Image (cartoon, rainbow, N blue to C red; front, side):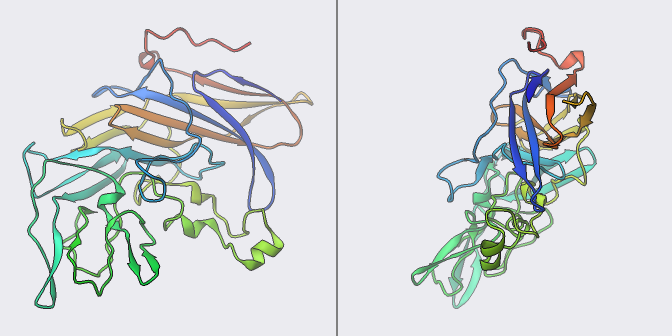
Length: 345
């Protein structure tokens, strides 16, 4: 099969198989854009490569994910992901505030606090006063979760392995309280689970993603290995935090508003209105469009970049002679220093 990419985005092609043991082809493209206040995202000259494995902030397994792998065969809905640091509204140390994002009609706010701890006094757990702060990285290390040792075993918080506040109920040591909480949450109680909040990528081993991977047991190993379990759901590949997986696919025209996620506190921009299409030219002469969806919007405020990922699937039979990806681009989102986009030979 000949592949023609009529876009400036780096592509990736591979084959996959669904839970019904049916093979299909996958095409992934990842575009890099810059943010300008109040404007549409702007295509940048240096396009970043696709991410071939989950990229963590620190050591894999004990730190949260900065960028997810691009090698997902299909996402049934669009994920909105944000890497950011939150800043107090006044620019001065504060005890708590709200931060978040509105993407089109979808809105999510989280509560951020300064550090505090649970301490055991006279047999009762009490929270220490909040220490005011000016800023905090929005990472799952500051949300509820974590692990502790119980004898020779390690107990893990199913929803977040790298957080804080999940502790041995019999401990007498002080315990860090989570600093990222649901927007309307009151004072946390020691030993009471707290909903895990954040704006970034949920790891594949954490709930709720793990529950969507299906049943891997002795029966699966005996009857289906290495194929997927029959109860596998492709929603496993949706990685956004609760409330930031859209009801369907983004159409690429949405407006984004960020609150207290930059030193300027309020940032607004618009998606670039790119239109991508895939054409399958079969060996029998037929030309058929194939679906390609904008399924990931990853906002990285540390680099002032937004990464848009389009993903399409196509059949492997009948044989395809040429697979093409084309796009239509509004003039005002192209970096004028870029050479014109030309068709490949």
